[in-house]
Image 1 (cartoon, rainbow, N blue to C red):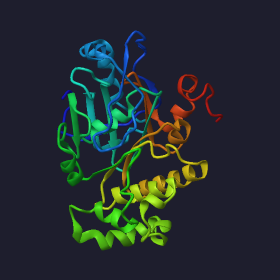
Image 2 (cartoon, one colour):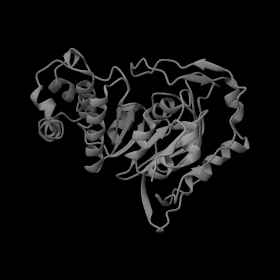
Image 3 (tube, rainbow, N blue to C red):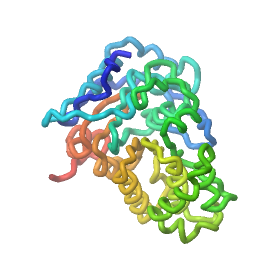
Length: 317
């Protein structure tokens, strides 16, 4: 790994930074395979085998630039998750993620945005052991977990909420939450009490089968289940996908509440403007690589990011 692991502190960025100006247009696309965890969604079109040839090229080295972030005040962050020069894909020798760098510090809320097919969901699944990693390194709490199985990552303190099929529909709300604590059944009752305070609607419907609930309520069940083991990092894949505007507001509010309780969050989101507005930092992915990275507000108001990814208009100051 290129970075010095003697310390888990890294300086923060002082603004949005473009990390890859290349935009190869001659790569063929193939459909993404179904997610191992049972989610049937795809992350758009995948890059062809030409993606694998990108290793060693100069644009992949730009990912190191994104990792060296400096904050104006000189403050440092305690890193929780650190991925360097990450390559991952569903098919051998066909990488969707091609040299990405990702950092999440303790208590941060970080968003990953980008166009369809950029590799956003593939990235977050690779961090959770659901997509094979073919290159690079992943560290969590200063321990390498690059190819650790999913259950070991859960034990280490990482929670994950997939985009779809993220509840057990025939089980009640309480039973779904119980499944989230299967590694530590002794904490179930204690966690019930706390999470029902965070999600009052679930307390009211604790005996209702999850499959009979609305999409927004099911997403709350999925969030609560992922929190049962008190993870220090929560990975969210498109938490607002397919929800009504009212339910999007509810989910966004709960995500910010979870983060305010000290849980770090790495979130892939199609609703880029909303995601950046609520995030400490953001990453913009394109063709499986880091294109921009910086504070959420600065990315949100960056004219180039707005033109390319936010509908062509930066938010007014």
